[in-house]
Length: 269
Image (cartoon, rainbow, N blue to C red; front, side):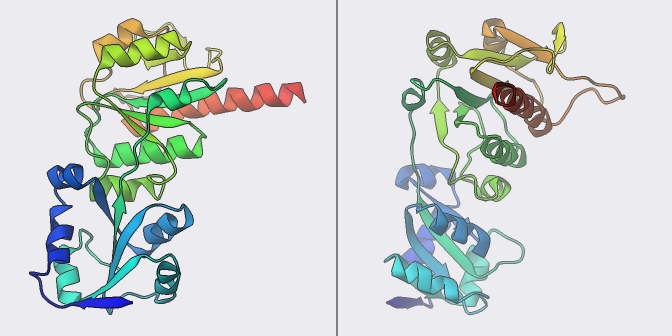
């Protein structure tokens, strides 16, 4: 059954607006997704989709049948109201509310092989979303967010993940020392990119358990991580640029680990 919303004062409209603010996303444990592509991703990955809101200018009404079959609440919303609550410049006329899913780092520690990306106070939504997407593509097990990172559930970050927000486990760590202790006691190498490193990223042999630290866009990796890292590498800088974009640097390191893993497996065949 589809209910119709015509008033901007409707409780559902107010709830959607509230979820555009981090405080309320945290309070309710929910976030907004917008657009046909990401709605499809959520359906394909059995995400806990709480409700879907669409307007008459939405282009794919077949998707509503799939949503209905999953017993998800559907609301038709006035197009003027949809424009008011949309966070995109050209709204596709469909919004969903998703329940957050929480993970614990302990759930991954007993694996024989583990690859983790740790985001150290990253502030740019595009960088964070791209790193999550890259980690997903590279087959990493999880992304750990250190206190001080941008909220991954804001609209810009979600769009940058291109759906990987649903498939890549995201873990929050508030205490760097505690996180480092867990990594060390479980035999996980801590990898930092440091300009003063003696070896380049492709001159190191990476083992089966790795945690790649991606530092803040302005200040780089925290002193605590650098001091406790047992692997320090640098990426070749052949031109005049002083540094790489955080997501680009992350991708280079992550895919070097992937390359070595593939070469190792192929050498055994």
